[in-house]
Image 1: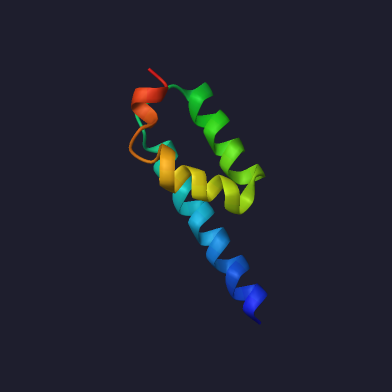
Image 2: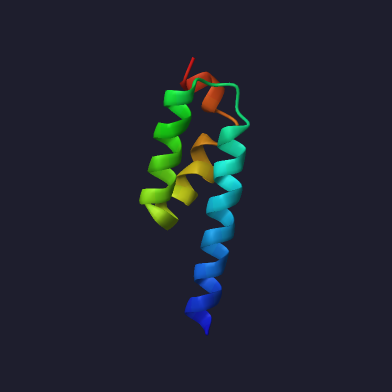
Amino acid sequence: MAFQIIYIVGVILGVVAVLEILSQPINLISKILVIVFVLLTSWIGIAVYYLLLRGRLTRWFK
């Protein structure tokens, strides 16, 4: 039961992260790279996105 809750929370956070990335004003290739990174690395990718990349994507990918 606890693993199911953790899995559902991870899926929700992943979807929210992807939607936030898609709304950023960066080029399509950069969006795809960040989305693939976040989704393939699961919890580590979600943590990196929310702790380091969120709010800084436009500066990193100019």
